[in-house]
Length: 301
Image (tube, one colour):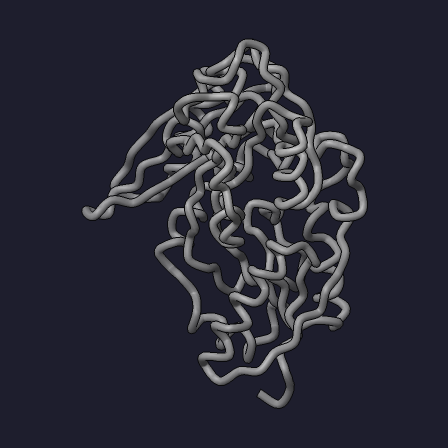
């Protein structure tokens, strides 16, 4: 390539880890690159929960605008934050491997003798700003007091250690990638088939201009098609439900050794409404998303 690849990223520790991950992968193939750090709407607004921030793509829009204006050559997103419809002229050119998509409940060891949600005391205060996680937590423990929590991963962990919460819920992917020391905490590792993650949780999306064939060709060399196959189904369900980051919707898909697809979905009308769950399997992905959506809507009606 005639120039360095300019990689757009947010500035949090996790976002920088993600950008450096793709930077290292490209370097192994002989490509040079620079990181361009941008601040998004979601980074600037720290006093509101996600469901109170207007619009979609509040962690991605500024990166997409920089791409369209030619200020960067590619953007690295947490795929779960990326709206299902790309702006005209942009495309997801590759996706990463999938880190553990589960959610983890973290609590001080003094709060529980064993790592299990049932060990939290009655009426415990749990920190999460995700309407999806709130709905699922209440499904299992209606007595919990759910409180919004913002900030990057280390900041949230410090709030827990300071005693602001009895427990908090964080993504395993971020905790694993940052390799944070959790030895002083009790960790409840939720089963993704029971506590269903966000569509495309744990996956990075590499977005480019649609007509930038040179960079798109380079990114195909680090693309994971097996991950794309299942996240395409998860994101299609999100699209058909006409939902975004605000919707209390969890979708997880996996493919077995025989090539069959299995989908688990959990949805609530609002974070404090009853939870509806669906499990469906098919040998082909064709119409699988629509079948799951029809089942969710049918159970919710």
